[in-house]
Length: 210
Ligand code: PRT
Ligand code: ZN
Image (cartoon, rainbow, N blue to C red):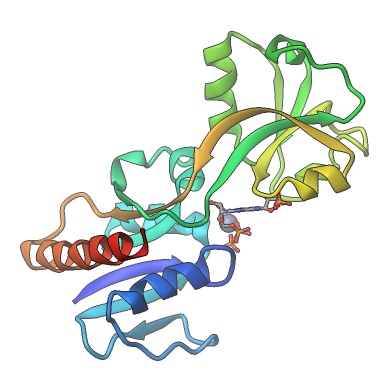
């Protein structure tokens, strides 16, 4: 039996479950349960917060998982990545108040930037040779400039409409992300064989979608 961790409820959940179903794996999904077993494949599914998934897979509590690359890399667990999955595409971007001048990234020197992704942002700024003050907040990042908490933000963007409705302008992409399959690094042989079967099916599903 192989144990898969997926997001309980959020932007990754539906596409993660759909991918498993498209692999021909059946299971009963009750929104109240935190785990379920497949009926026609030796697979158990755990439903977790996305932020907890890389840690559980690293520790071997779950064997494999589906999570956004943004969370994986922010948590410094990129060595767990096995396969990109092509859904939940988004980008981590810096945005400033829409009337604020911004010629290039050096405009952020010495400024306050609010984000939930301090590590990804710090890596980017260091690469650009810019020093800024990073304020880590866990949610509602987009309102930080309007309440005087920060000069700029760094947050996940997909359509861009959240930025616009908060009077912000996207000025720089820091990281591009999509959902990825991750796996524990020392899987037992039997589990590795199940993962290989699953990867084979995922590959077939993705080829059929193209
Ligand atoms: O409860 P839990 O901790 O499990 O979930 P969560 O709230 O932390 O995550 P969730 O469900 O919001 O996102 C899960 C993953 O989906 C993220 O880690 C990304 O990999 C991916 N993803 C894709 C997104 C978006 N698109 C997205 N648009 N994650 C967040 N957003 C948010 C963004 O933070 C901003 O508030 O949507 C808003 C912007 O959207 P647009 O379309 O207005 O630009
Ligand atoms: Zn989360």
